[in-house]
Image 1 (cartoon, rainbow, N blue to C red):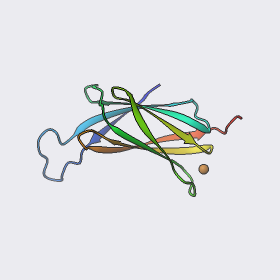
Image 2: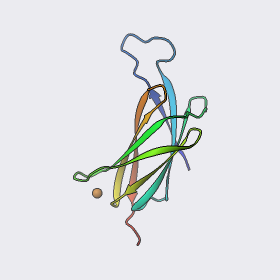
Image 3: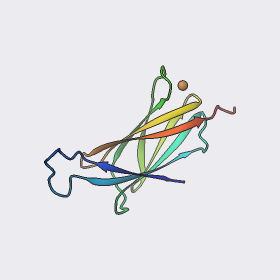
Length: 127
Ligand SMILES: [Cu+2]
């Protein structure tokens, strides 16, 4: 199941907002498998659309995974576009517990946005 979140892209300048393009809504729906997440390689599926539901293609998406406790190195992944507006990444959860994924998305026009996803309760590897 996809979870939806609305985001605003762009940084309107204080007191100087020009035109209608200063702000664009971008929707990122995400799905992580397996579910519930477990130690090992997880697939992060992202669907990126504008406010009208049009797929946003050509985005560059990087993911950084961090655990909620200190002292661990982050894990990284890049998402590839597998269909218009649909991106897949493979990320390794190398410890059980609570994770936070930082999604870093750059649109073809250079606009950039970041979003955090909490992934709680990654289960130990069942072997
Ligand atoms: Cu850890």
